[in-house]
Figure (cartoon, rainbow, N blue to C red):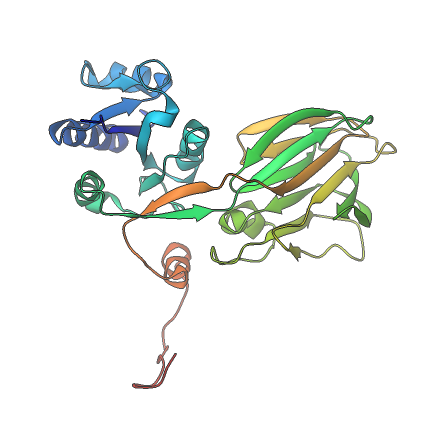
Length: 306
């Protein structure tokens, strides 16, 4: 019989998250599945919960490709960390929101026990989300850094006092150069994160596209752009700039960008997989998470197609 390895990702920094992790670990073990923790989480949770003899360690006892699924207890930041952990294996991620907005998480804490039961019963669907491939090239076009992003890749100025001088290229053609605080390149998943805060468009997950949003640009043309998923975006830090830049991917991985550096962003061939228990409309998720006012809505007339 094949062992069902299920990763649990949780921080030990909040009492309610620790209690939830204990419940999930116990429920998985009682159902005959093998609970798995990342090494850091095992140390942190073990310091609070004590013995974790029923748990094995990712990368030591279980390879990432042997994971069936990851259950994440936390907000969007914890889900992004889980996406890093399972990146080389492709296990789907089920988010249980223990944070604030928790846009990526589908399940609220009150439904946690039912969610674990449905995971054990394999009663879920898997939704693939577009990710980005991100490379940094030096002035000689050598690739010096290679990474990925689920939400966004952001080129930002490293110095608060000065603007960053950049030029944006789309599909190997120059579009515009300007001084700015930075540029956000986002997926549809990330369109409700940094892209949203920067004034970019909300993109439905079913629409495959890449959004580009300049940050505080000194330019007449500095509008948000929505590109085809096959497009390639490049952001060059101009050699004339008086400050260096820095690349951030999902706010977790960074790389310094000296003048002359070139950041190339395109669609990754490997999506991120999210486990879903409910087929809720994305519109409903927007309304619920952002608490949007819908009072007075009549809806379509009875018998009339929406």
